[in-house]
Structure formats: structure tokens, C-alpha cells
Amino acid sequence: MKFVAFERAKQGTGASRRLRITGRTPGIVYGGTGEPSLIELDHNALFHAIKKEAFHASVLEMEMGGKTEKVLLRDLQMHPFKQLILHIDFQRVDARTRLAMKVPLHYSGEEESPAVKTENCLVNHVMTELSISCLPKDLPEFIAVDLSGLKKGSPLHLKDITLPKGVKFVAKGQENPVLVSVSSVSEEAEADAAAAAAAAAPVDPKAAKAAAAKDAKTGAKADAAKPVAKK
Image (cartoon, rainbow, N blue to C red):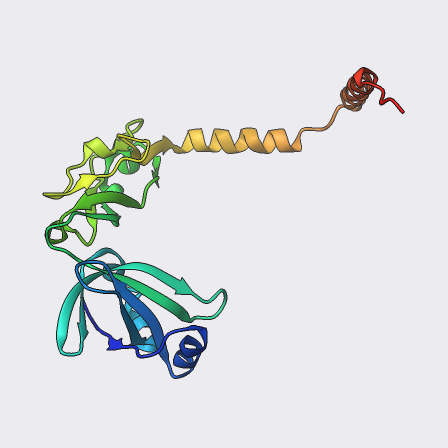
């Protein structure tokens, strides 16, 4: 995916504010062997680009001053309530250096799985993206996961899928996390019914009074056990 950037001459809060008024977004490109570069981008073109999944999870080609560099989106600062991009950061890509990225998971086939089609189960996508490590040439835009083989009582774990060539999962406390869980509709209904019953259960006045008395007695003992301060 390509985008066009321009060199930015001035920096600072005031300069960035004036830049945004003209419809431009300030940014920076860092990393690699070069020095950090101050850049600016057309806000409208950038706003449309960030809506595309590929802009967030793939190597981008940045054209600036007649030259093209490969970069990754690293940070995006949005206005708290306006549809306005305040600042954007990119990192230069070194073809020989492994990247650490989060890549989206694209699920398909669950409607045709035995769990949904014949066993009346609910499928929950526990993870929607995966932390991976790979070389830039091996970076996938997304990882496709086929759910057509899902069965009741058999959640899908990471080790149940095949990652693209050159891609490794970056474990963060979980070596084999659950990607997709499968539960029957009856189990979900029973859990909801139990929660609703607990919330609607009437309060026993005698039990509440006994509990209050117990708390008061415990508090009195704690106060009595405190040492008396000397004057």
C-alpha cells in the first residue's frame, strides 16, 4: 500500500497547530540507518487510508521527494472527539531485521461447522489479532483461520492452526492461547438464568439483620483492640 508524504520544515506545538488548520497532519519517520524525518501528510487522504486494515498491519511504501521508503505505522494520535488525526509515527523497515507486529485474524467457515450447523452451539472469537514476529518480506496482511471443523466442546487453540511461512507467535504469558471458544446454547441459557435468578432473589430481612449485627460486633472488637494514645 502506497501513500505520499512531504518534508516538514517547522516543528513545535504552534507549527503543528497551523499545519492542521491547512488540512495537513504532522508526523515523523524514525528507525533504520537514517535520521528521524519530520513529515506532513494530506489529512483527508490519510483519514481514508487509516480505515483500511492493510494500513495498520502491512509494510507501506512512503513516497517523499521522488524517493520511496518502506515503513510501518507505529503510532496514531486522534483527537478525543473530533474526526481529526493529530499526529502519526512511522518506522523505517530493514529487510534483515525481524518485526514485532499485531496481525488481524480473519475467521471463516463457522456457519458450515458441525458445532453451528448440527450441534446448535455458539462460537465466540476470543482473539481477533495475534502478536507475531517475522521478517518484513514474510509479514502477512492478516491470518486466515478456517472454522469449518469446529465441534461442540472443542475450542480452537493456537497450535490447531498453521501460521504462514516465516511467522512466529510471540507468547505473552500464554504458549497456546484459545482463539475460539465453543459452547452450547443451553449452557449459555443456564448461565444467564442463574445470573438473573441471583440478581432477582429476595433479601431475607433476618439474614440481613444478622449480618449487620455481626459486622457491628466485629467493628467494636477492632476498636477495643486499638491501643489508647498517651497524652
